Length: 535
Image (cartoon, rainbow, N blue to C red; front, side, top):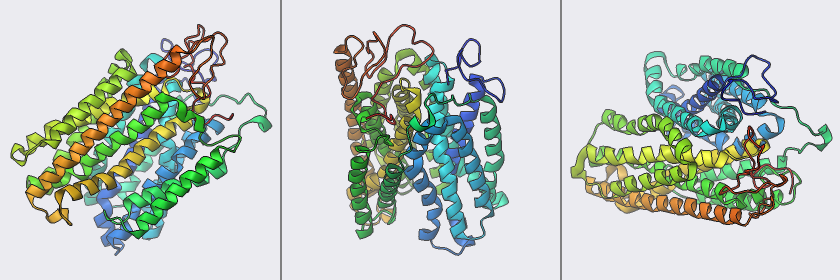
């Protein structure tokens, strides 16, 4: 696939074209945006239905929470495999299948007569969502002119925030008006529309140039190990309703063992699921680590915020929900302007600006007092959320813009995985930090003063984590510059990387090939990105 020529709105010369009609950046971005909204809706809408489901199926909270956990586990465990499979079999083909699976899973959820069938159907939904999350980002570099990648990433961030904001509110309206099954039925027409747009506007997959026997295979052993490892970690962080018992410790130990086995397997297979040498690229490694740290802090606003608003400020549930909706609204409004900033000033500078804004907002929250009221919480929250939207857009652009086409799927998967791991970790770790600082066994009954102390300490830790993320990004950029300055005669001297373009000199921090004639196809960080077939 070739990037779409901005001036003509069709696939650039030499592209594969589209059997379903004329390919356009606008139509393709609309399809990708709808897919992003669907996956975000699926993640957030079911939470509001848990009390209703517990009543309908006469089940306990521990039982109905699997309606949410099944989706989360499926996405987290399968997301990297979905990205790698897209690189191997074709991203358009797999994205269409993912949308269809998500839509079918939604219908199965709506028709489920028993709780266990609903949980199984939610896992099917999660499989489709994993494919959509990964390939929407991977497709941006395929379908959007390189000069506008930042804006496209910002648009996807906006749509994700819209889906997140709509999930609880739309879910509540549907449940109260039409019943819980409508919560899943609404995905069916949206899924069909997304499928039609994607089929019509996304460029077809390019034909593989290698003979069938020479094509890299799919690393089944690595996929199974990684899926089990990620599932064990996610369960260790989410089970126990905030406690950490023997089961959590056993799951965490299993996850650590899984990581060790996964590294050993990936170091031996000819076509690994994730090429370990990719993590020697400072741009990629810093971006993934920073993304995990940042989303860990963002999760604190969702875990700690409600306690500050309800216990500390005495707001009722409706007002708490209204204040918490400020975050997704700000993220939605900031996404596209953030993309324009990235395209104008560059991804690295904009990433640092977003992190600085987040650190300032978190520091302000660490000093907030109950006497400051709602305004004293909302203003810093707006700064944190806006900074996060800028960071996410810039960081995604920095990581994805220069990836070789055959590796975009698995790299996009790693970006999404880093975010998911941060959210899962933040829910557990930042919740534990809050409970510790509040010095209360049950924060739901803690005094306003104890809650305020817990909030301030939690966000002080959050500000420190953001500064660590900033140090990683700056350090990664300095390392990339050092590697680029040593590159001569077309050789990329970064560890694990070799630029095979004759005469090409890699001068971008992190690996841009500036060889004349490379226009139209984003240059690759050769041999340093995940998913490569070679060792």
